[in-house]
Image (tube, rainbow, N blue to C red; front, side, top):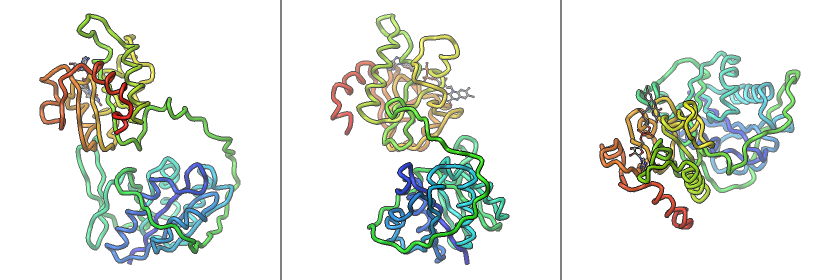
Length: 342
Ligand SMILES: Cc1cc2nc3c(=O)[nH]c(=O)nc-3n(C[C@H](O)[C@H](O)[C@H](O)COP(=O)(O)OP(=O)(O)OC[C@H]3O[C@@H](n4cnc5c(N)ncnc54)[C@H](O)[C@@H]3O)c2cc1C
């Protein structure tokens, strides 16, 4: 019989679990039920008390590695913590969120334990065995993987499962002792852009895509890049949406053209860009060509604003297409912030 271990870690507060960790708990509960296998949840936190309380209703065995040494992400301490949790749980299957914190150490820990790892898992199926799904070749080929090697580490992509939310109550948690190696790295803190400067927001409900049309000549024969920038940032501020871009728009920066300064290649959606997961997407001033739209695979409700009635979005790629000037539409939406929020 398999021994299932779900690994979780705290967010920057040091005590509450990250959303991706709670999603992995849901995946672990589903798998444990299907396989009738015992489930252990391991917690890495500064203080595991409230995280354990939030998991009390799972009925799982709770293990924790806690203390000041684990308040920050650092390879040596995180790897030692996860190795100790795996050994204490005698785990054969280890599910972990594909967070930057665990992605960095999971392969190393799998190697220490003589196991195997697969990453970017989006679904777990199989009746008596475990079949893990992941996408290859820019989300075009879906593979279903099963392995005999144990322990088998599976890193789950965020947004593929609902976050676990159960009633919180005092829980019995077993503290696991960790033999730390000599620490050479001191974490002095984080430097990150302010929230309103950060335009890529994986947890946002909505994706706004800006296409090259924003920086092209408009019907008055002029380009309006500064106005485009204000409209796009105004929309992001009002809605909390994440900002994506077409390749043509982000490439313009390298060609010396007038560009939107807050866009980088990290915003690019598509075949050679990213494939984010959001409930809704609104494309603006973008033609909707296949290499771009392939990055919309996981956007549930797709809408586009385009001046071109023959654009790719109209060819079955969007649920709704508005033939309109995006400058006018976005300016109108931004003037109705309450409407935009909804
Ligand atoms: C190997 C390969 C990989 C690629 N990978 C990617 C990728 O990962 N991502 C990607 O995006 N592309 C990718 N491309 C490029 C892709 O094929 C397109 O060239 C690109 O997506 C076009 O960007 P766009 O639609 O923003 O620009 P354009 O094709 O220039 O379209 C601009 C649109 O804006 C509209 N418009 C202009 N003004 C307004 C207005 N006021 N209101 C409303 N609409 C307006 C125009 O009607 C037009 O439809 C790839 C291409 C290749 C060959």
